[in-house]
Structure formats: C-alpha cells, structure tokens
Image 1: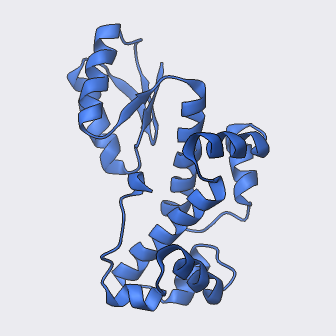
Image 2 (image 1 turned 45 degrees about the horizontal axis):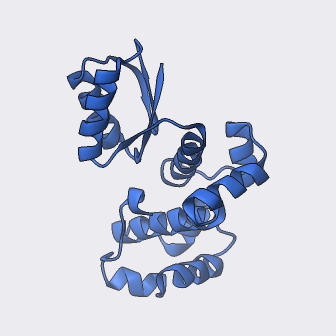
Length: 186
C-alpha cells in the first residue's frame, strides 16, 4: 500500500519518515520523496499515531487525490531542479505531463487553485534557491551555474535572480547566502 506524505524534500526526510513508520510497526518497502510503500495495510490506530508523529516533524499524511497530485508536482520539480545533474531537454510542462499522465492545463489550473501560485513561479523559486545554494558553495562560476540549471544565458539568470530576490547574484554572494530558504518553505 502507498502512503503519500507532504513536505518530504530530501534524503534526511526519507530517513526520518522511515524511523517513524518503524515506530508504529509499519515496514516500508520503498521510500521516495513524497510517497512510501508499506508491506501491509495500516490499521486506523497506526495511521493516527503516524499522522501525529509525522506532524511533529513537519510532515503530513495526504489522503485525497488532488493533494497527492499537487505534492507529486512539487516533488518532481524539486527532484528536477535540485537532484538532477543536467537539466532535461524537455520543457517543464512536457516533463510533468509525461510523469503524471495528466494534461498540463489541468495540472496548472489545479496547482494554481490550491497553492495560490503558478507551477512556473514555483519552478522559478526552486531554481533560484538552487542558484543560491551553488553561489554559497562558491565552486562554480555564474556561467557554469546558468548552464547547469538550463538558463539560456547568464544575463537571463541574473535578471530572474534579481526579480525574485531583489538583488543581483554578486550582491547575494557577498552576503554569504543569508537569504537561503528551506525547500519545504518555498
């Protein structure tokens, strides 16, 4: 049986969720960002206990289809931006459509209605957070960062960065990344 969990955004999240599942007597078969497959169907008391312990850690069990779909969209975008070495040549809309098997118009309207922002703005926010992370590490030039994240030019990356953060990448770099945000807060 699959359980869907909101706010799972990193490998440490997977470890924390696995620990909580085991505490309530559930054995995970597979754990991915946003979803867990368990061996047996949990009884209501296990689900209630799991919901409470996950809630204390900032996670949330998702039980309706639309919320699951929103969480899958977020997870795919996070994986695409933060955990993929080279950006896919597919447009974001094509990527989401191919992975989720829904029309992009439906996904976009649902996401906007529930989240109060567009998929594109969410994607841009994730990309800017990745740029901030790479700037703080100071291992890549701005040109290399732009290439790695699939920006058409350094000028476009800089423009988008300033539009979102209110400062240029070089100003941000001098502030030593004091404006970075947690992925789950974006």
